[in-house]
Amino acid sequence: MTVSTTLRDVIGLSNELPALSAGTLVLIDFQNTYRTGVMALPDAERALDAAAHLLERARAAGTPVVHVVNDGGEGGPYDIRAEIGQIDARVAPVDGEQVVVKGFPNSFHRTELLDVLRGLNAGPDLILAGFMTHMCVQFTAQGAFNLGYRPTVVAEACTTRSLAGPDGTRVQAEALHDAALTTIADLFGPVAAKVADLPD
Image (cartoon, rainbow, N blue to C red; front, side):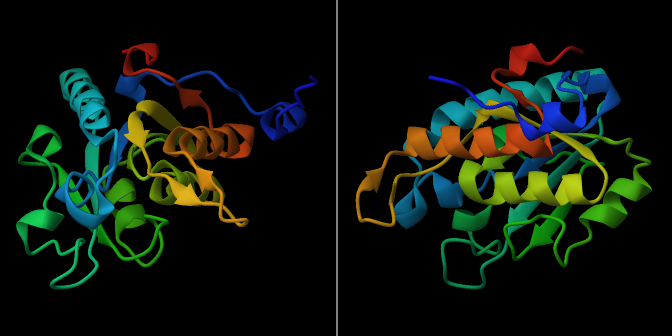
């Protein structure tokens, strides 16, 4: 079976993974929303453990960290005023780390994220991880790319859920996760399979 050349290769974009110390870490929607209830993800705990390791390494390297949360309004699974919408304790912000609130899959759309990054004097390399791979991670990577940033997604610190395909057939979470990462790697930015793949 022939594998097509990526768009990144066609137009000459680098696939080299950035050093953690040279980038800005953006953690997307690591909310309790995805640990319990209607939006619970089957692999959330593993992804959160990986994200906690990524965050620990980033802090040790002096990497700026920005947390993004989705606010879906009061009473729902994305209610940031309730426990369900809070960031999981393993990756919760500490003093000095900013939190950006969003309402769309692209974390840059109608948010303060771009202003926050500019205020941090963030360079072009953004390191992304979060929930869900096929939705907010993918569209934030696209948004970053469109704004001239170089996003890199850490695969093991992301996950998603199973959905029905157009013909009603179940698309397994693993397949959807892989498809989203493949889309990202085709154009928007490189994908690091593991946290350990990123140099300090």
